[in-house]
Length: 251
Image 1 (cartoon, helix red, strand yellow):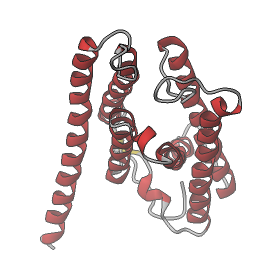
Image 2 (cartoon, helix red, strand yellow):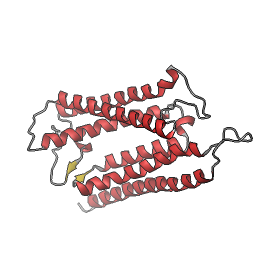
Image 3 (cartoon, helix red, strand yellow):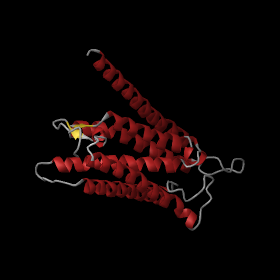
Image 4 (cartoon, helix red, strand yellow):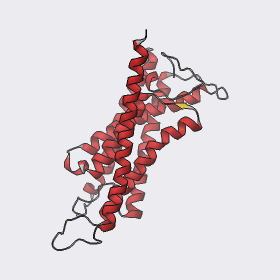
């Protein structure tokens, strides 16, 4: 009986180390990118026509700042609304930020690793689907809004919720590209060559499609979990400290 708490404590300390390591990596990236951007030339020179200029670091800096703020968000929610966030969700969230921001933008995985962006968007669709189950869990448990929802409706809501947030992200990318002249929607090659027509739209549409696929898979898994009382979804649910979520059968 005494060994189980020790294993749990060790697991949580390992998760905190992973979280802290990723947070410090993003924070350090903000500092180093800011310094590099300050000393970078404004325009490319004939000696180094494809070298990075100040504008090339704007997107890196923006993404790293967003990543740092995103990693502070769970702690804020836990204190503000007394939320309990499953450790599995916390680690998946941190690893996703590390893969998307540090590896993707800072280390150029989006350009150098085939289908890196597609893989991340598929995973994000699934993660947003899991978040959708938590949202409907809060609504369903609210005594002021009593609801008895069918598993099919819960799965459908989750799918719509995840696809909606995926679309909001694409709006954010389009807005950033328009205002800051970045290339989040990959309408240009790494050397600045503009894509035309269908090729310019390809990245955005592909992101929406794979977001939907990831969300659909999570919705189906959630439907099976709720319908047949498997208890899979409950392990990923966010809940308040005063709530005791059921282990099987309902969301």
